[in-house]
Length: 201
Image 1: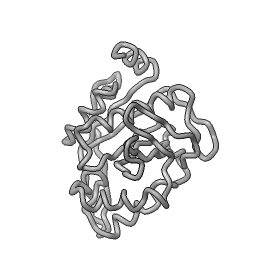
Image 2: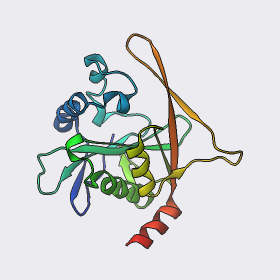
Image 3: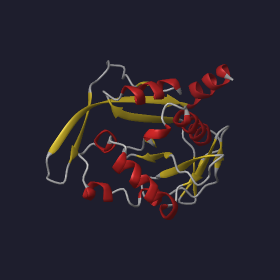
Image 4: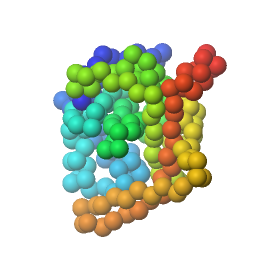
């Protein structure tokens, strides 16, 4: 759970996620935006939706979620950005922006701010300071906007020395049906991120 300070960007405030404040608008987004399966990997149902009711205060796996608000409208939750640690020890970034706020650069702005923080001073997760040198992201291979966004903020395809691999991800829905999707895995490293950041400023 995010126990750190808020982060401010040119247009946004990123506040540590809190279920009491953020869960209701987030669940509304997931219900109404029309891309629940793209985000969650399973078809929409109220049962599947309910699994996200405590998304902002999860513990374990060093999960850290920031809720995103426009500076000029602090009552208006527009999405989130954060990360979590996988069982293999790698850290994965995750994000979601409400449909009505997409294509405004908010997601890239928020992601860069969180990446800069975790690569720099670090963030507080469950009252422990976390810093990392590498983050990765996975997205459905067909989700072109997410892939393009990740590339724009410094991510590149994760190609092992023995060549590129096709990554598949499986999801099980409430009827125990298994869905397998091809996903794209991208990574960003601390040194390259700050080098690219310096070049564009």
